Image (spheres, one colour):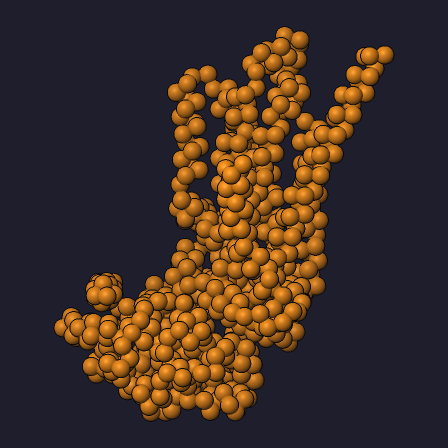
Length: 273
Length: 356
């Protein structure tokens, strides 16, 4: 009994440490004053500034579009890459490809960003939406591969063989057998890529240009003057949106599970009849 | 497969929706067209109302992008792939960019409003004759003190910092050139010296300041001073004005024997594509009323002499931010020193920091 209490206490402590800074920030977004030193009264002032700052809103939208699109394309490419690595016949080739993938995963963002900058300017590619999108896709692919590959490895080899035996073409096998089985891995890869893209600063900083900017670059460049509470207000809104997304995802999952359970029950009832 | 396709379509639809909103948003604030001006500035370093006013007055659409350090900006411009029409380097970076041939020579005949700039802030060592740059804001290095612990007359000069009564009371800025500069000034030397003996002597002087030093820090100075945790700090005027806004016991002094003066300047990079727009904006920002409005918003000192009469009297007559003629004459601008000498400054400063 005592052990159980200690573990609960520990869990609570960890969550407090993780969430306290966020709530501190949210709390001060309602401050009348301009600093986080003391709370002088409640107001929506900083939210009003935020909503009238069309440049900031445009940057938020840019950030979201980049994150959604880049992770989508990275997921497609990464899933195909994972399938490719899986189907490599020789062990040395397989390990080699996987190592190359992992090197990209662990190499520092700053180096990736700087090399992209040199690469794009060497090609005469104008910096902006395109360069940011391409580089985000590039650094997200290894993450997707790492999330999808274990799922493919879990896939029983016999299932694929059975599909071929029953006369499925390789396209049918891919879309009707393999992809449905690895869907959880693909979704996990997508969400990981999405969060990576959303909060990336180092790579993005190097490849933004010509008026295109993302949220992390913009907030960082405001640091010289001291970040104002408009950023707190924005963080609060983003936190609420991500909270809603998580809750929505949870409810959707439960709804699907319930439906599946009902279907199974209905089927059982039919058999029993 | 069906689930994957559904998600794919949903994501694409959201992207399209966001893109549409974004397009509408940008279309609302500006009329699309070729009349564009790309500005690359420090984050939050202009009154946004002035940009709107400029757009209304001239019909140009301003694309505004931000950076966080001189070095970052320099890298972006040097590497190419961008076409900024205006950017805002500090003094030593102007010198560096000029030397790297990154700057477009300014045609003064297109800049009639340049006469509004105080002649004291023209023709400085980092850009003789102002061939490449127009001063935007300026500031100084000085002493901030808390009148609850220190009398004003105890901190009017740099050498007074060495007074034993300030034991463990002073916060220093973590910057080799600034702090060695203070020691050099007390010894009557130039802040741009490359003389090894002068630097050595300055460092020995600085090491004697260690007993009085509470900490050598950067941005945290602001917080500590505001919360009355230290009596004295050596910091920049811009930081000082923010501290003073939050704690009425704080005051700022620029020692009359001299100090560093810094400038942020508007320049046109060689890669600029809309030079006519850049000149229009320079003239716009040089208008006294606009310069005064911007100075009030940012809180730094404006080099625009004609703008002074539009500033509130309390600001314009404040010797803390607009020091007397005599003091200004003693202020020195940092010059971009050879890499080897900068290394020497850094080594000596590290030596000083390790004596604690």
